[in-house]
Length: 197
Image (cartoon, rainbow, N blue to C red; front, side):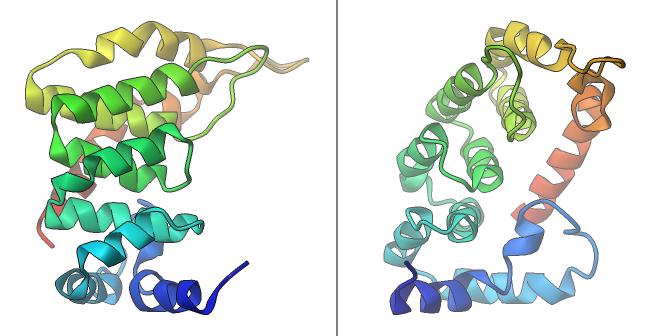
């Protein structure tokens, strides 16, 4: 049930900016959302960020994580990691924030998420494993570590699993999953752009 406080929280801090922060269409007309995001980040405090992160509305959690990213609020890393591991919606924001913090703990949260979400019985469930994979790759590159190797066998099994009756399909045949190098370049570009705000 939406409370008056939650509705006010949403309209003040979230509604003006959440859609591009999903990673979609962030380049189209950035003037429409960048200025409101900059204004929000100048006005927001830690109490509001915590309310956003732990809110039931995934859009609030997403924006809360991006505010942590943009303001380099590393003291929220544990909260963000817990949100990620609990399967709380807002994964794109959590992954980018953890990649920005690029700490061994961030890498462990991403690794643990992938170890859990890449496992499947019968049929793989597509969530945001690709975003977490890219965030872990980004973290590894920055830390000069190799956490990605730990989950690579799970990743390969996940994307190469065949499903369908008459015609077989695999996630590996779809651009979202197959062209990880191109997707990584896009992830890094969005990440770098957000660092400028």
